[in-house]
Amino acid sequence: MKILFIRCNENLEKVNSETNVTGIYPPLAIAYISGYIKKHNKNVDINFLDAHLNKMNEKKTSSYFNVNKFDMFFLQAYSLSWHSVLKTAKIIRKCNENAFIVVGGPQITAYPNESMLTGLFNIGIIGEAEETANNIVKNFNTDKINSIDGTIVNIDNKIILNKPQVLLDDINLLPFPDFDLINNNYFSLTVQKPFATMITSRGCCYNCSFCSQIYGGNKIRYRNAKNVVDEIEIYIKKYMVKEIIFFDETFTFDKGRAIDICNEIIKRKLKFIFNIRTRVDKIDEEILIKLKKAGCTTIHLGIESASEKILQYMNKGITLNDIKNAVSLCKKNSILARGYFILGYPGETKEDILNTINFSKNLNLDFASFTIAIPNPRTLLYDIAMRDKYIEYDYWKNFSLGIEKNQIPYFCDRIITKEFLEKILKKAYFSFYCRPSFILKKLLLIRFYIIRNIFTLLYYKILK
Image (cartoon, rainbow, N blue to C red; front, side, top):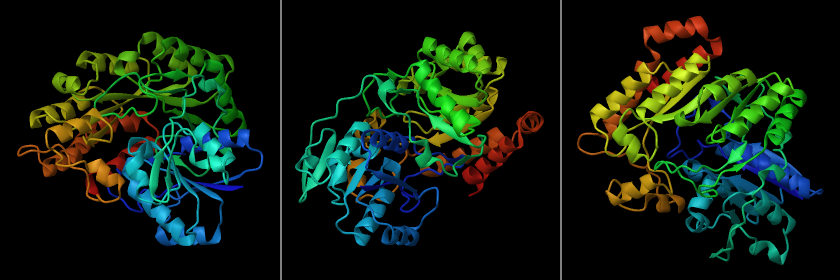
């Protein structure tokens, strides 16, 4: 059986996607699914097409599917790239009208019925995909294919939603990602090559109003330290990886487990560097000392706003003192701090936005990322947008059906206009990265590739 996993070119039909100027990372979800299928099926030939990495336009994509034939296609779908997924599925259908196409990802989980009503897909995977995808492969060409748990199917234009897939409690039982499948020419301007991406836990117990928690609710499932470091050791020794990016929502939520991971890295004398993501109220002196010793160089922090009022609206559960303390501790322990900020949140004034930009400059951050608030699918923020008439209709429903192609509106009124937000976003990047004191500090302390990243950010966020 010949299978193709596809990451679509997000720019094939660009509507809402943001340009990621810092790099393109390997698709970890696809690697996990491939690893799971290979473990449970011996007679499968799994292939992978990263049309995004390879910048494949419609002509190149059509040519590829005309030449290469497969029994089953798996497409990865995020909401912001949904129209590119639809376009790719149409190209596959044009080359092979009887193609068996499976689609999974956050978009299908958020809007399963609407996504399947496009008529382009045979099966949609809802929620975590490893076990569900494996069952689809095992039951291909059998009567069971349309009744697999965790799926939604389109049978002669009739949509059938099957029972949900039971989440795996012990994620230590999952095989490691299929690194050979995705080990390609990925890059990041701030990361050393070769690099790998990992996740050591799944889920988040917080309820930030701008964030969608569609996988597993607010339960966090952990991998133990041995399991995590076993995977790290493979990357270091087999693939000569120099840096690892951990994409856990809150790496240090369980402080004891995070320390155990660091101790295991130190015990095995694994030499590499890594960066993590966590909350400002989930780091302290003890964990930072241990992270630094294990090789952590950068911590990504969700700061979001300089307004206590807006932080409350966001359900962040943090204070400005928490933020200042976290950044200060990172600097004290010689760990780079990258802060993330949201501009134009409902309820913000121009003064609030300007205060957030100034706050970012006064925190002694090494990097800052700014975005304009948009109401993503299945978030409290989207409910607010609908309730307060920032959006007059169910935008994401129409978007999922392939009808809506306009960019989702910002939270604008007579004072906070779209033009103001786009202008202030450029100002945020320029004023943060073009301070003489900041540039001098980076020239003296940071490697060339960090300087290159700064100028690339400025080009895409201000000049382009």
